[in-house]
Image (cartoon, helix red, strand yellow):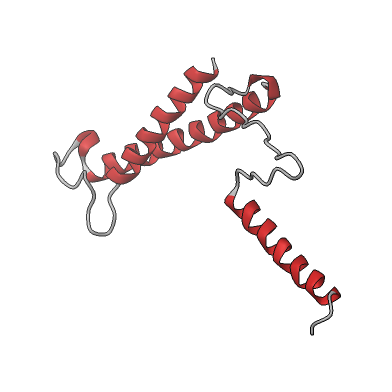
Length: 127
């Protein structure tokens, strides 16, 4: 039901855009030509397009609210996880192994080792 209403919502949105673009603006719209009498006269087309815009806009708003309520009541269990990436297993190197998968981890370890080295050299007297 949700998918059907979503498709209808997309169709209503496309029709709404089309009707809005067909309305006559200051420079003329897509309906600038036509017969001078009846529904397709300038006045008849303007009334029809104005009413169609109002109806489609109202339908769009009502359907948006209905779809939002339906989506909120579906619950968290209805989330599709078929495209989710699998979680990578956590790899932690053994202490003293020195093997690191992440080059930034290796660089951080080298910086810590370099900072520890001058402290060891400072403990030994310089001749």
